[in-house]
Length: 126
Image (cartoon, rainbow, N blue to C red; front, side):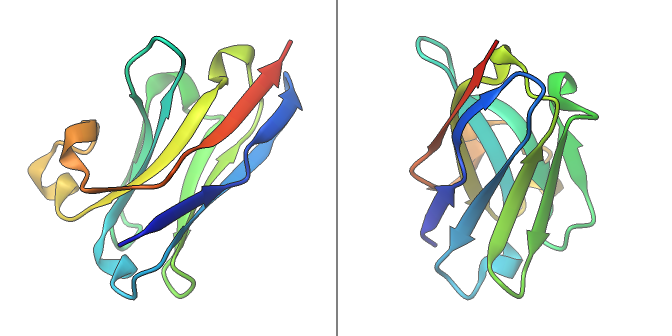
């Protein structure tokens, strides 16, 4: 499956952005989906994940209550709604897809994901 992320940009602290990730493959609904982020000089970091049917979600502690992951399987889209943004949220955000990561319990690990979008830059100014 090919993934294309969009929606990044420059926003002031306290603002909001919604990232989108469009999958090219009609089997999108069979994939668990996740968002990761990476800042310069840092490792890729788990942000949020959602199971293939939307029944399970999980978030990194630092974004709980501010970010929300959702998906629309009819449109092959997964979203990341980001509210109350902070300068430390500045990063390139990547969407990722894999099957059965929730079942295996390794949904927070980048190596668990087979498919990645190209990344979209989010910059939060103070």
